[in-house]
Length: 210
Length: 382
Image (cartoon, rainbow over all chains, first blue to last red):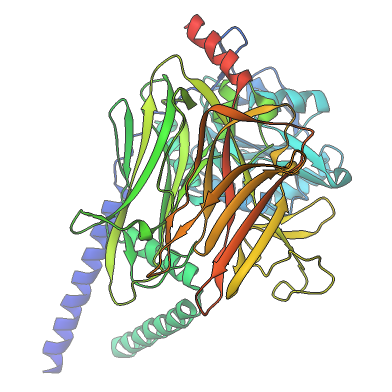
């Protein structure tokens, strides 16, 4: 009798496992059809579309190496703006990007770039310590520092803005990151503090990596 | 360890996890329980978890995933669904959004049910995508990018004829829709929200610029759930402090979601700073957002002592809920001036015997002269 009961329990457990496995397969294999727009343009005062690429910039990464257009050739780039002392949205943004870095660890074509907007405080040693604390490979995620003119230029290219508040200790900035394709054109903006937006970013990374 | 002992340990751990999980779950607030429930039901596809969308050229329709109504859910507590959408991501055509509509449907029977099951449907645009395309980068980060909210009491609204919000067909908007249930206690059922956006493709529409003003009331951040004598009159007890809490330049806390008690009350807030008018602007539309037991909602120009808009609210007489919160529409428009001061005043009458919650906002739409010039040039050049 015990043997019969044990056998029935085993069969039931196997059936439950099979159902769970099928559900997981179904959920992960849902087709993702999404066309990414090209957002690397603006409409000028004459009403004409002016196309541009993410180019003509010069920053220094947290390893104290130059970072220019050459470093993003043939790369899919995620770009966001942050500062190391940010107590509000940056921790959530960092967690989202960390998840992306881990999920796409083996995809050499994907690069994450985080530009600091706190040029005074976030020096190269500070960015280096910050990068080390995150524990992601340097080939996957770079933290960038530039001068004011370059920061202004890159902020404009990525269509964002920031404001200095609290006498330079705090900054208002956007929770959005941009995705840039291998032609160095912006293909989307994603709110890194929103789970659904981060999921969409992962979907679009997969689309561009194909 | 023998397989019998292993099985026993596994079963013990399994049941222990269930008990701990149940204790954690039942200690959550109603709002958080709804979040956990909805996520689980959608993740395991126990109820329909997909959005359905269709675009006919002059109408963009969305059907939300199913939302399970199994409890009383006050404002901001009920199950919700959200995602990003583009009207047509295969084209880059300039369109105009001219009207918005939401209705509630019973999932199983697919019939329209009372709008008492709609808390709100919010439509947000992405500033980088929207202003970035038009080269209006100086507008980014100035105002929260809410296009409009439909809510209980105003589930349908249209811009005045000849006015609209410009949106490219491959431009993303964020839509979140949340359910509500003030009254039905003894049933469990699924609903969906049917959402539609009216779209116009004409070249002769004038653009509207959205601005939101909220009635914000001060509270003591150190003792938020007591009215202290250090605060001026017109202060509040917030519903909670994590959401809808704002700080002014002096670091004082204000809440946009507060409690109202039995009886009548009046709340006032100066919204001149929120409006942040740099130039004289022409106002064409106001869509109010209110909760049950609001009775009057007034926007006033206190410099000229003029009432711009007085929303006379209709509450249900036989149950909790809003019958109507009429919006403001004007084709000619009303001028608002940067040197004038403006206030919001809300009158409430809580006829229930328990505390209720309140929010009061106005989604305002002004003629956007700068954008109009750009769009005219765009149509001429393309």
